Length: 379
Ligand SMILES: [Zn+2]
Image 1 (cartoon, rainbow, N blue to C red):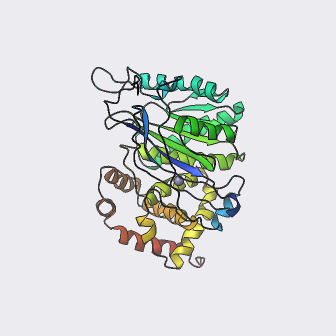
Image 2 (cartoon, rainbow, N blue to C red):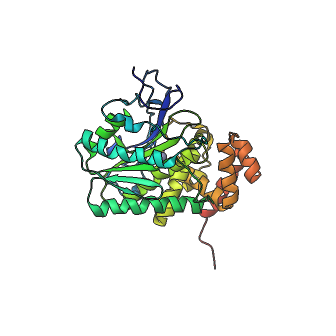
Image 3 (cartoon, rainbow, N blue to C red):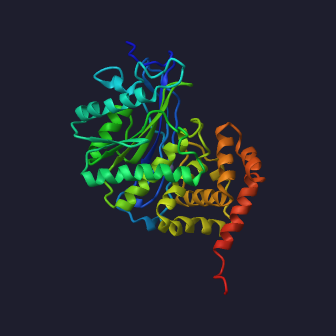
């Protein structure tokens, strides 16, 4: 297989993705699914797919409030992923550009962004689209919908980034991903599916949205893109979808691309949808309160890994766990996440940041939610 101009030191590159799927619209279930699989052995030295994750959001058109009473999703998904056909027909724009590294070894972010911008024409040509691109400080927003819709996503993207930094005490100048996060918004679901197939070798027919982490090799730039179809027209729902996916993308690459525990990944994504829209707090808390009242054990959730299917109630529990930890302060929460990213296990990271382990967290969470569900306080 002919080598292209990719500079990956001979190592295989990889793209890891989480996908938002809406595979069962009739059940009205809000679900996220994460899957992973081993790296393929393709000779393509370009973007090989080492792992795939899928994460799912609600079926289109389903009112958010239904999440509180939605039937839990079941079953696991193992999405097959294959290397994209990079290295021909203009697909080299999905590889690192020749000048991506400066003489001093640092990454030339301008060169990486310039290469990302070249993707626009290739995507438009291959998919027969007329997407337009808007550049923001952290994102390249590609959209083929009307100008007002595109402007919404442009606004939401930087608002989410600022909100993530503010919520978690992260310096906005700290680089989370290399280049810019590419956000692709498709007017047509068919084109969204085609994009996933042509550029990410992914089956997205039942996906609500997805993000793909573009990993070339250890020590090389780490990039990310998000793809969202506009089959949901309610702006509040669209923003929720973007906030969920955008948060996954952010925390996948924050500091280093170390996978966070599934409950934390999903809890963070859900937490940010509530930051975005406080009206979601009630419906996203209720299932967890019910679980706490029933003394539901959290072992399954704490043990869940990428590829496991979470139930509606477990998303709610994940959200309230993150909410509980956040209430102890940004400093502790950030320390917890940083320790996990540095490779500490969950118990050790919790003890160092909070002074209690996973079991202690479960106990405290249950007490906090039971109190939240208590009788109305008397004045
Ligand atoms: Zn998710």
